[in-house]
Length: 82
Image (cartoon, rainbow, N blue to C red; front, side):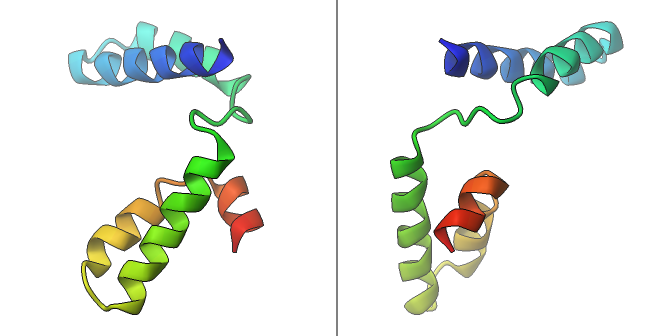
């Protein structure tokens, strides 16, 4: 339930930025601050994504994509994997 709530709040924050609604943005940010330790996806998904990115790096193909994907993995999960 918390993951779904965080996903909805992140979408709402993105919409607030696009529509330039600072009140809605700050409200969503305040709610998201308490949920910062919750990952949207299970850790197993992030492990698979990390391994896939490392295989892309080993083959020297799609380095920019691999870099972009690795930086989408939450920092705390990235540190435990690496």
